[in-house]
Length: 606
Image (tube, rainbow, N blue to C red):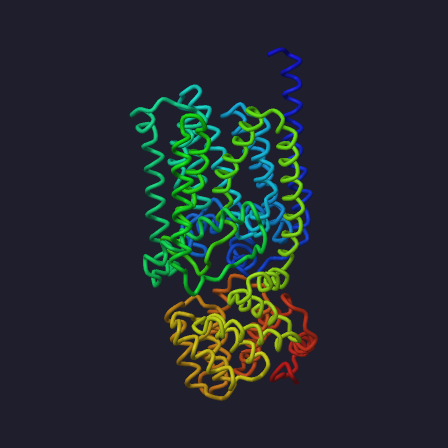
């Protein structure tokens, strides 16, 4: 190839890279103004003190040893901590880092496919659809799905290293592949199918000769995959995320239907939502037709393996990478999820892109039409994705849209109610949505707890108590419901029962700060138990993950009042000062001035 041709190729590649990056940001830049959503963003970001504090020694230890939302993924948690360390806890930054990683992955996917296949425009088509498909909005626009974009970046890096290794086997390329794979697993365990992808790449596009060598060289990869598979299953089982109540036959039927659903959504991406409720029943005829379709495509792909090997690689890429999340082991309450297509869709795109390239080569007159269809597909995806991204602006827009497109969506109703109840004037509206959720899913303990809490916030503690009791019957380990029940019991003057509930809560979780404060508030109202109340306030303040929170300001103030009552004026002054340093308060400031002047004060209210 001449130098001028090489120069032209380099410019074409640069144009494709820039086109991918600019198109991703044209669609996703809006997320820089988006809020957190109350669907897993809490434990991953705004409620996670370790993340908010940035890269600290305790935070790094928690990332390596801890579990978040029933997942062990230290690389994901460390990346979120790094965001906070560099840019602060702002939601827009966390969103934009997801976008940056997605853009990098899109470019890396093009580079990987171009290197492995030597086909520029087919590789570019796959990369552009991957970058802009509306099914991928969930993975990119949801902060909690940092694990998706990060693990996929490492997957593409590992595949690229493997391509380099296959070209010139050497230890450096192999270790890079193995290291990238390990980081991918530590971002999201869905990558356990990676060894299977290597075998598919050996078949096509690398066309490596079959033999024992290509199996032996993958033993470390299979070992890592097996270890992570077992670990992920045990973590999910231990944390109660695996729901085996659905019989195996039902799970198999749903898996078959989901495979077809994802194909339909790939080529006709409408009615997309953050959560799809599990169907009440799946017709045997639906599962049967899905099985026949999947079997037919599998047979055709195998039949064409000599002349069109990309069909087998693409199809079995799609089938294989969905196995961990297709529902054979049911994890979570969702029927299926857009985010699960982030990697598997690439297999379908390989089939389409290389099939179109072969058609254009066989029938040159179709080439303009194929090119036009490819451009139209990219432009259509860009428009649909831009619109889909807007639904992720905040919790309300997200769940209202989900309810509109899915109908009876108990989780969207419940989460929308939980979001609305934080605004006092919207609590009656919140109650309506939570009640709708309970009509659809009567055993939803979180919804019962939120409904009770909402009523308690409206000063309806008597009406709230039955909902907390129902929540605890359905999920005895829901400590928030027990804490809230105790709060309402105390408000109604039933201090003994409230103290019993709180002591039960603290035996289950001695670090539950709010329960310590709640118990302290209750004990302070019982004559003769003031000293115990002081101990509980001090314990709660010592255990608090956020010593500058409004709750801590309130605890300091109440403790100071109690200490005044006990005649410990100097200790009271210290806690009034602490309360004032957290949250300005005119009454506290006035009381503190009087105490410093040597005046006797019995309470802040005086």
